Amino acid sequence: MPKTENCEPKTSFMSKTEAEYRQVIERCKSLFLKKNQDYGTAWRILRLPSITDQIFIKAQRIRTLQETGVSKVGEGIEPEFVGIINYCVMALIQLDFQATIGSEPARMDIPTDELETLYDAQINRVMNLLFAKNHDYGEAWRDMRVSSMTDIVLMKLLRTKQIEDNQGATLVSEGVEANYMDMINYAVFCLIKLTNN
Image 1 (tube, rainbow, N blue to C red):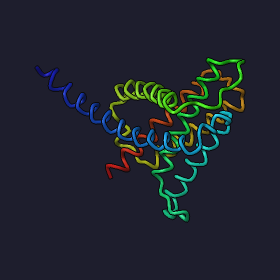
Image 2 (image 1 turned 180 degrees about the horizontal axis):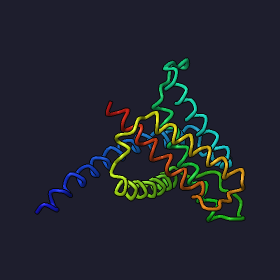
Image 3 (image 1 turned 60 degrees about the horizontal axis):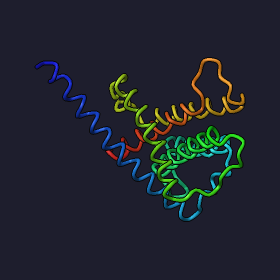
Image 4 (image 1 turned 90 degrees about the vertical axis):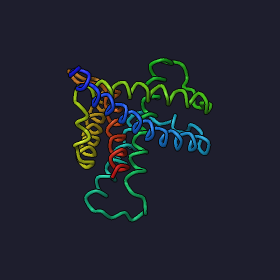
């Protein structure tokens, strides 16, 4: 009986996290698919370092806004976290296309229904990583500051840029894919915390 009592709070905490996580992702995916209707999949032309730089710009702007508290273009930090998540999903999709297509010419246009399936597949992989890490770390992110998580995203971006500059070679570290996945999770955590506040 005591074992059951100890497990219940963790289980309910995890289901709360999953519900909050899915709400954030629905918001991000909705914007992603609407932009796809406006622009198509023009982002398919971007090489991975270009996507990494787009994410860097968004993370750097968040940090600047956190430090100055002033936005001259009228947008706060939440849309930037949404942008980080969606650009990271783009990067993961690009990586998958590179791995599966190889030397065949890149397919630029992706129909919306296929794109939604690709988006969901990447997010499911990222969520599996989240729940594995959350199990080990016990939801430690809930006690972190949004500013600290922003710094971690920037650190992971600098790591990714370094790996890209080394043509993807690493000696003992995870590759760019793991960094994109971690950046999605930290950006989701930030949006959960900002929404709850």
